[in-house]
Image (cartoon, rainbow, N blue to C red):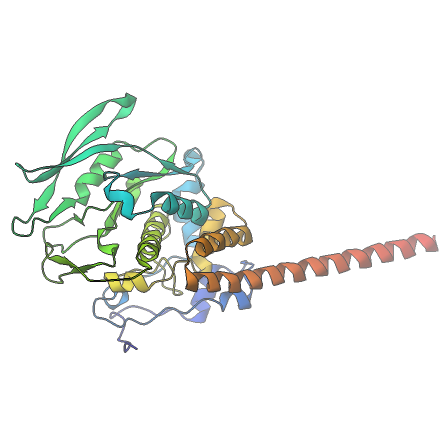
Amino acid sequence: MLKPISFVRGFRVPKQKDIDEALGNDASFSNEFKMSFNSLPHPTSDLDWLANYREKGQTYTQFLRQCPFFDDNHSLQKYIYLTLLDNDDRLLLLNIDRLIDYTKRFFQMEIKLLPLFTNINWNNTKHTWMCTMKGRNDSTKEITLRTRYDSTSGHSQICVDNVLNLLKRSLPSDARCLVAITLHDLYSAESDLFIAGLCHGNSSVGAFSFFRYDPRLKFSEEFWYDWKIKKTKSKLMSTIILMRSCRLLTHEIGHLLGIDHCIYYECLMNGSGHLEEDFAQPLFLCPIDLRKLSQLAGFDIIERYEQLLDFCTENRFIDEINILKKRLDILKNEKQTVQTKKNKDFDHETTQKSKRLKKK
């Protein structure tokens, strides 16, 4: 087990009082339900997020004030749009249909697939990726994607900022966000080893790469272009890739919907400073962020958990199955207790009313 290290200087670890205030005193979650979530973990590496960044957190009340989608001016923005920055043959590694299905169950919002990029091909003369991009009124345009290339390894990376600028021009009027997903490696600054993705929250766009989420690949910690294929016989490879992809996509879309990094629990919305920290984070939201999303999407928490449980069962997410079953048991028992009390109160009131009528 890795030894905990200190949080970054100046980071204030939330106390129970802070956590309760962040959730809101009027929240309906029971103590038993809240106790089914793990507390905020200590950093165990100098690269961990909270070993480097002084996050302040976001309370439920702050979310209500900051999220733009509660504004009447955004009432027509209902959909999460995904677009694929890759060719179909490469995307076979990702099960796009399952990824979309999970995203829909997670957010309880309609997901639409927008065909923006086609004919993605490598220009061997310019050493750059090119594609055809669909514009408004079904017009098309040939696009050269900003690319960096290493001639020795043959590895390339696409500049994520370039992609985001293209997405901004194509954001549908009814979109809450537009997200490009790809298996191409991405970078932003020249000093980057890589970047898993980037959001421009104010513009409601994001782009994310699953290239480094493949468990068969081993990457250099020094050179962006250096990676190897490991010898692996894991029968769970497709499950691992799907789980990692689900985690990344829902985390980042959560940001685009206005949910900041979480500092109150172990949570999907915790920040991550490197891939190992990312892979270790939970697939689900803590009570505070669950309440935020529930308020935004207007779903029934039990029904949503049941849908997620069905997905996890179908795709053999073993640990997640156990977590969801435990929380569903708590919520259903509480619901039954409340209903039983209501029935008793109703029966008592009916009996008292009958007695009063007899006296008359």
